[in-house]
Amino acid sequence: MPNDIPGILGDNVPRRIEGRRGFSVSYRGKTLLSTIDPIAQAERAADAVPLLNRTLYFCPSPLYGYGLQNFLGKLQAIQADSAVLCIETDEKLMDFSLEQMDAALLQNSRLRFCGLRESAALCGFVRDAWGSRRFRRVEMLRLGGAWRLEAELYEALADALRRDIALDWGNAMTLVKLGRRYIRNGLRNLALLPRSPSLSCLSFGGSPVLVLGAGPSLDKTLDGLGAAFGASSGESGTGLGDPAGRPFKIICVDTALSALKGRNIKPDLVVALESQHWNLRDFIGGGDWEIPVAMDFSALPATAEILGGQSLLFFTPWTSLSLFDRLKEAGLLPESFLPLGSVGLTAVAIALRIGSGPVITSGIDFSFTLDAYHARSTPGHLERLRGQNRLRGILNIEAAFRPAAFGVQSKSGVPVRSDPAMRGYRDLFEREFGAGSSGNAGSVGDSAGAARLRDISGSGLPLGIETVSLEQALALLNEGCPSPPGIEPLPPSLPFTSPSVPLAPPSIPLAPPSQDAGVQQKTDKLQNFIRREQEAILTLRGILKGEIPAEAAETEYLLDTCDYLWAHFPDCAGTGGRRPPGTDLSFLKRVRTEIDPFLKLWSLALKETES
Image (cartoon, rainbow, N blue to C red):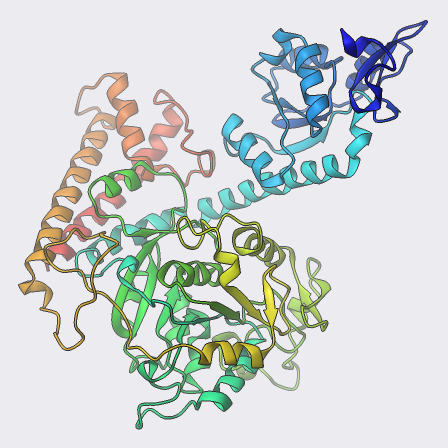
């Protein structure tokens, strides 16, 4: 072969060089394998790596794969649920390895070989190959010297895998704690589906959109808005107190609502994700505002009625459930978004989805200062003020100096504090919305989402999008054209989740739900859906109680159908639907204890649709 002939192709092609005591591989001016028994050296390197269970062994640039066969054999011998990921980032070395490695090695079920250079793509490859929550850790398996050609890239890829595995386990712990509450809220919110339009019915057109989080930098933005547009002009119908009289739209997260209320800045839309009751304090004092609320399918059911306005549902899948597939097939599932975990990120995704104009963010900081964790007048800030006394000051010392917190520079150069959770959300923001992102978190198919985004300079962390001054942001917002709020109610004759619905004339009031044939049609569809779900869970209960004889296949089918019963179990959460078999008595007993409470929830959901 030409690769075996030294000097013919130069250093741009990997080539094998024979020596007196062995051979080596030369490439890009470097020797990648030792000339002194490279096979034995690779096996000794593999022997030095500890054999651990549920471990992903990261093998950079394996070349011939020397040492891998023995290492995989040892993993098999101890019955470790571990695997080896071989990765080659150089295209020519990749081709070389695929030609030289043993075919039986490449076909081993415990080994995967890829040539990906992007961390996100590599994490997706590992998840597709082995599933979520398969591994607990990542260990390096260096069997030669070729990895030194791109040592920093390989280390960065391994770190990305470690972070992704840690994120999977963190999400699993969240599901263990809150998964049952998510699905309970979802079943309670089923009654909202017929009378609450999907978020896809809301359109801001080409108007600029200001997305407001609740971080400390929000104060400066709100003060600037008040000075530029006027914040207390509800009687005259202009300024910020009347959404119809300003040239831009405002979307705020629920925690920021009280800060806007204190300055008489009425938003066009409030976004709520929280599934627990303490979310309700964010709405204190806002009962007289009729503001549309975009609420997640798993949000606290009371959120739908608290502001007196129209509730618009959207859906972020917190885990994989066959129930969601059935809701989608029935045409009952509202507009879907990627699960981003942060209400600020979700608000940005909504702004990109429902409008085509520029989107400007403020208060999405992912950082805090000694005296400000949230903006003024938010529930957290007011709580600090109320708790201030001679022994406890306004400074948030507990948060600022806890072990996980660290100092960092903001996008304006001001020293601020952050923590790993906030930094993780910041990285997620950049990955989903920054330059080079796919745009899928925002508008479906909109790869130019980052070009529409701007972030107002302040004390928050840089988000990976263009930063503008407050003056530039105000000028951009002022370029919009005043237009009335655009909630587009679905005509009765159209399907519930239709994304293309014409605007209803504002002067024509909507008919009450009881008189709307379309709403009644959706209600009938929902009631039939609930009854089918009740039949399935009742059958499963009868089988588990021994009242209904069933084959093993039917039990397995019903367990998969009613997967919301066990998706929050510690051994099932975040595994992508993996569960113990239907012959596992301990698992079946745990499932049995979940059935009666969920039967009551289905009955309550059916009753609420009938009222």
